[in-house]
Length: 247
Image 1 (cartoon, helix red, strand yellow):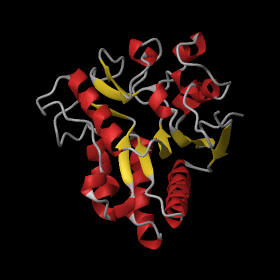
Image 2 (tube, helix red, strand yellow; image 1 turned 180 degrees about the vertical axis):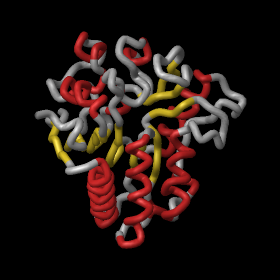
Image 3 (cartoon, rainbow, N blue to C red; image 1 turned 90 degrees about the vertical axis):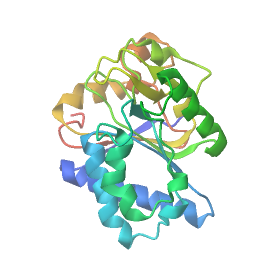
């Protein structure tokens, strides 16, 4: 069973980043107070970078013990290790290196120069999640593309149809780079909370479609707008700035 989406709008883009950072820190602190080691799926992009910098700024005043948080990524650009194009490199620079996350708890998709093919990298990431995952994300962060894509599952792309897998190789992506690794929709379903974070007028139409109703994997609605598929088991929140908030 999935949670119906809730919209939380902020007064500005910067206020959005702060609001999500505060909410995430509160949620992680609550989970740790219950004795849990929360697992979080991160996303990339400009607004995610702003969010991550807010996490670094606010964490010193938070009770969150970042050494007891496990980090993953919903998708990754298949680029060499250390390449600034990779989502994990952006996150390391913005906050991971600042807040004391245990390196053993940071699980990245193998880089393109790791000696693996794209398919092997997706399989390796899947195996890592089977070994070190908790069975569900406390929070899975997702962005939304102007075309309605989520993670690296694009409208009409065969990767968005894959079942019985955790991660999938994405070839011929309509957005550069052409090669990526993405969690599947089925993997995303194992999330207590799914948080979409979107800012900018170019995302407004896609957000409206994503909020128009849930869609099953492989349905025409999901093919047209993949962001209609992921939902959390406990909560689904669309965190939006004024330009993306439905009127």
